[in-house]
Amino acid sequence: MQPQMNTHKHKCRKRGTSKKEKDPAGRGAERIRKRENKRMVERKKMREQMVTLIECTGTRVALVNVQGMREQPAHRAGKRKNVDLIVLLCSIQEMLTGQRLCHSESHNDSVLAALNQQRSDGILCDITLIAEEQKFHAHKAVLAACSDYFRAMFSLCMVESGADEVNLHGVTSLGLKQALEFAYTGQLAVRWLEHNCHYQHMDELLQYIRFGLMDVDTLHTVALSHPLVQASETATALVNEALEYHQSIYAQPVWQTRRTKPRFQSDTLYIIGGKKREVCKVKELRYFNPVDQENALIAAIANWSELAPMPVGRSHHCVAVMGDFLFVAGGEVEHASGRTCAVRTACRYDPRSNSWAEIAPMKNCREHFVLGAMEEYLYAVGGRNELRQVLPTVERYCPKKNKWTFVQSFDRSLSCHAGYVADGLLWISGGVTNTAQYQNRLMVYEPNQNKWISRSPMLQRRVYHSMAAVERKLYVLGGNDLDYNNDRILVRHIDSYNIDTDQWTRCSFNLLTGQNESGVAVHNGRIYLVGGYSIWTNEPLACIQVLDVSREGKEEVFYGPTLPFASNGIAACFLPAPYFTCPNLQTLQVPHHRIGTV
Picture 1 (cartoon, rainbow, N blue to C red):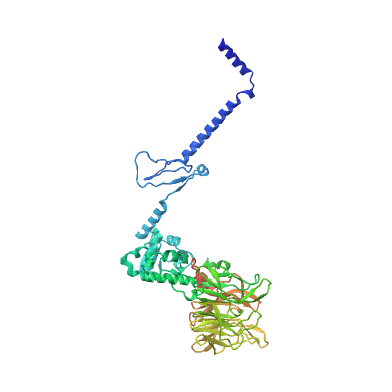
Picture 2 (cartoon, helix red, strand yellow):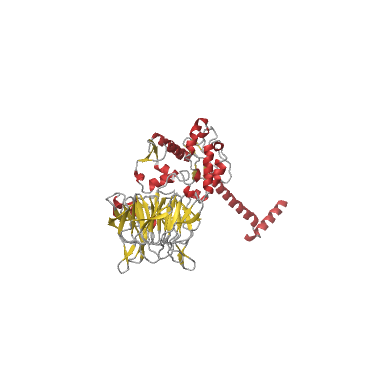
């Protein structure tokens, strides 16, 4: 009877229980367990997909789970040598897309080794480098990837970009061989000097090391602490020379040697400062760097790359180059009050580091003056001061002392003249006096005697003009004169002066348009007249006129690429281009109507 009673009670309890009262905790737990089991199955499948064994051709591969699972063996039986470990990183998104990222630690070395073998066998090479008549096969892509120099050579419309052979001047065959070994293997045999059998070549080799381009910390921590350097008097002397070079910041331009200059830099045209309509004074420094030869004359802005700007914008300033340093002095500066006036400040640009440094200011404020570099000095001549008074004074800057001192003055005040250094002398032409008298005089400064000497006068008066020298001839270009009514007139005639005969000649070719207050620079027998002002339109100019006098009897004048903006009171010069570029000057040197046929 007892079992029946129990059964009855159980049945009664089942009949009297509603759906809401049916064991909710037990059923709920069961659903949770099923859900968890399902998730565990999914996670297991996921882990199985994330930890996979792959059999590559001839290579045993193990895959490691990024969630911390232990490494799985590729094969239980048998072991193979040279096992490559490939780490498979597989995110959920990668799993869903069916893609996995595999990284082989040996792949890069294998590819580079294969390219090096191709180079050794002369297979699939597309360039041959020649040094000291010895030829080396290589791949342009590898060279460009390892060297900014070769990247510029093969990608910036240079002649070498399409050549099968390139002759490298100033490079030894041994040096080129070592450089190529490093490019293809990442290894360089630099410790051979430590063997006694090579000590006799050490002093000669050390002369080619650019100690002056090393920073001071490197010189101290590496060069001075290295036993090889300490054991060599030559090495110690070179390191000390470099340290003294770094300590004498202002004297660096006159202490330049091959050990302080980069090995290769092509010259290009630089433009500095100026005055334009939108912004009164410009402080940007730009260099000519065309991207596309065919569009060099169209996309003007794209052809000029910016570098570190001057500390302050200025116009009608002067520039000079000494030891591949660019010096900027004086000019007209706009103050916070909106007033513009001449300044005495000066600064220096180092193209190696793309940086500016202030130098000692001149003794006089100057604008519309001349600045020239002769031997170890800069000379500032005449101009107008902050009160617009015309000056007769001349001062000289010594980089070693970072100091300006006065030298022999003019016999009269002079501004708006032109000047250039040629034959070791400073030549000054034209200008206007403090009594508004236009000049046609030609004066030359002899630094050893510290005196001014008068030479044959120009064929006509000129102010706001430019002067340049090619070989032993001076050329005066542009500017203006006064007519019989004392009205200004443009001068388009170009006159040349023979230094040896002291005679002036009017050239058979003229400027294409008149230019006043222009910058001027010379390179390879060509004179570049940059920007300026037109008294016809009373507007600044954006043109560059090029006077090619490199071939006697075949001289010509043509327009070069345009400036990024119209500007007068701009300065120009040629300097080594930044080390990471190799500008194609062909677009500067060829008339625009011939660009497409070159």
